[in-house]
Length: 292
Image 1 (cartoon, rainbow, N blue to C red):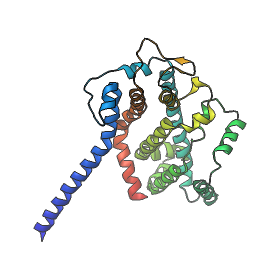
Image 2 (cartoon, rainbow, N blue to C red):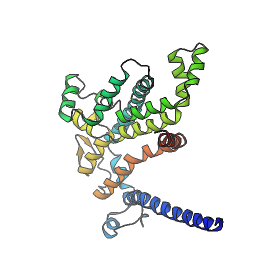
Image 3 (cartoon, rainbow, N blue to C red):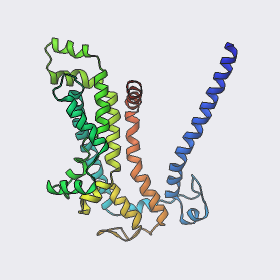
Image 4 (cartoon, rainbow, N blue to C red):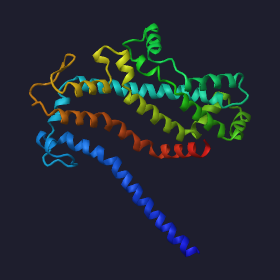
């Protein structure tokens, strides 16, 4: 019986490896295809339906998109919004989730009910725009990260994580004379690094890919983030981007190459962040799966 179990377990392991390998390839191939097309010539793009390595590498698409100062400026705007927005969002999330994790908090149920209500009902685009306009935040960087400074879903998950931390650790810290804020900073936060890393990555990806906020609230092209600028490049693969002219010394590349080049440029920076957070990110996902 044990021998049959061993054989079945090996067959199951082989099946899992094959399935996961195929699944991984299907997720990686499209990105490799986009990278290959960004370096390919116009003839190869037209003639070949699918390829990963172009037969002839050309860098005209990248030279073209970097020939205008608009793209580097938009890149720095996105980096700024992502960093500031992530820090702001994590500050609000952690400082709100921690007190809500305490059952003796006065008005806790009412606050949680109001928070849960926002998961189902929202004001919508027009009321959001009117609020930003009424606060005088139109055409400012504040409008790009303040509206999304707190995710209700992330708040609930972080609150549940804080509830699972041993209460004895906090009690011991207070016996030693540590204040509530000191306990939060010295005991709770160091134990919460997996969750902090996980949701920092979630917030960072959200701010980096945010397209809607800039489209609604920013009219000054000098304040456009990267996603809006990439949209302009895709729509206008030649000429100007609201006065930001491309350098005419570069031969105009095929539109398909430009489109794929901006996809690579827009995706690669956020992918480079993940390896530094992978250890904590994996642990944070497991904690959420086990503890709910």
